[in-house]
Length: 208
Image (cartoon, rainbow, N blue to C red; front, side, top):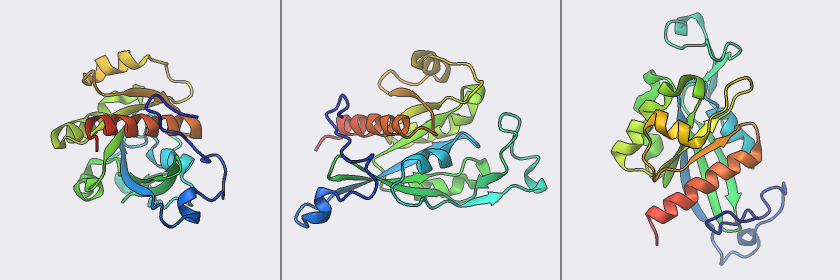
C-alpha cells in the first residue's frame, strides 16, 4: 500500500518479518526521529504503543492527590497514570525507513524536557482532543516557533462530537500548509496514516 507521497508500508503488518536491510548489510536503513506531543491525557502513550514493533518504553507513574490541583481529569476520569519523562517506540516504514517515536509529557511542569526530546527530530505529531482543543496550543506554538514540521492528529474519542479537518484547522488557526488528520490512537492503521502524512510533509519541506 502506498500513500499520496509514494511511501509504501511494506511488511509493517507482519510481526517478526525480516526487512531488506536486515539481510543485506550494504543497505543501511534511514533512521529518523519523530516527536509525539500534545496535552495531558490526549493519547500520546497509546499512539506510540499502537504502532511500535518493539515493546514500547513508557514512563507512566500513578497519579496521586498531589496532582489534583494541577491536572484536569474531567475529560478523562478513568485516567490513573501519567507520563513523567517520555514514551519511546520504533516502527519500520517501507523497507529502509525506520521511525523512532518519542512521546513528550503533556503537563506544563514537564515542558523543560521538550528541547532535549525534540533535538534531531524531522517532525512532530501534535495530538488534539476536540473536547479541549486549547490543550494543544502550547505544542503548536512551540513547533511553529522552532520551525519544526508538524501535522495535527485529532484523536477521536468515543462519545465525542466528530468534526471535519477544516473545522479543526479554523478552531486552531493552523496554517493551510499543515496537514490535519482525524484518527484513533488505538487503531494501528490510523496511526500509520498520521505518520505517513508527517513524513511526506517533512520531505516536501526539506527535500534531499
